[in-house]
Image (cartoon, rainbow, N blue to C red; front, side):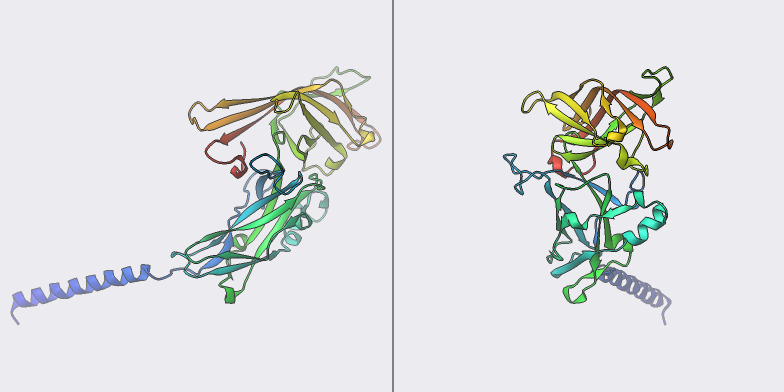
Length: 354
C-alpha cells in the first residue's frame, strides 16, 4: 500500500477513535453518576458545647406581619429542615421522603459523655415537636422542607434537648436513605431566641468570695455567660461560673426579667430572681440594659445590634461544691451581647448569631 495512503488511514482512524471516545465521555455525563439518595441538610457542630449535634436557632414565637403570634400564643414556633435529593443530575421524578424518630441518642449519650454522667446527657425533644411522616420532593426539584412545629411554652432548657430524626427507606416512593448515617439522620439541638437571649461577653464581670459580709480578696475573672429563653422578656442563666456542662447547674438557675421603660423602648431595667431558697440569692441593686444598633462600617447592609447589661450585682451561696461548707459569692460588672443582622433577609432566617 502507498505509504502516504497508510499515513492518511492511520490518522483518520485515530481521529475517529478520539471522537468516539469524546462522544462516549459526553454520553456518560448525561446519565446519573450517583444514586438519588435522600438526606438532610444538618451539618454537625465541630466546636463549642454541642459537638456531634446540629445547633439551630428559631424565634421563641413566630409572628404574623402585624406582630401577633402566628400560632395564637407565645412560645409556639417552627423550623424548616431541608430534605435533599443527592446526585449529579436533577431529580426527575416525584419522590416522597419518609421520616421518623431516631434512637441515636441511646448510642450518642454514653459514647460522648460516659455512662456515669446522665445529668449532661442530651434529652429527646420529641414531646415538644411535631412533623409530618412524609415530605414531597417534586420532579425538577432537589430540595424540599420538612416543617417541624415546636412548643416551647412549658420546656425547661436547663435540660439539653435534641430532636433526632431519620430518613426511612421506601423504594416504592423513590426514597432511598443515604448510606452515610450523619447525612440521613438529623440531630437537632433547637434553641429558641428572643432579643435578650444568647451568649454575653462577660470579661467585665468579676466574682468575689465573701467572708463576714465583705469582699477582701482578689476577684476571679469570667469569660461568657449563656442565657436561655423562659418567655418573651425573661431568660435564665447559671450563677457565677456554673454553665451547662456542670452536673450541678440546675441548682443554680437565676432568672433575668427585662422591663422596657415603655413599649418599643430600647432601654430599661433588669430584675434578677431565683426559685431555689438554698442559694440565698440577693440582687444588690437594679440592673439596666440598653440596645444599640449601628451600621457596619464595611458592609452597609449589616446592622450590629449590641445589648449592654450594666450594674449587675448579686450574691449567692454555693452550698453544694464544698459539702457542708457553703461559699458565698458576690458577682458584679457589665455584660454585652452582639448580633450581626443582615437587613437583606428576615431575622428569623439568620440561624447563627455572632
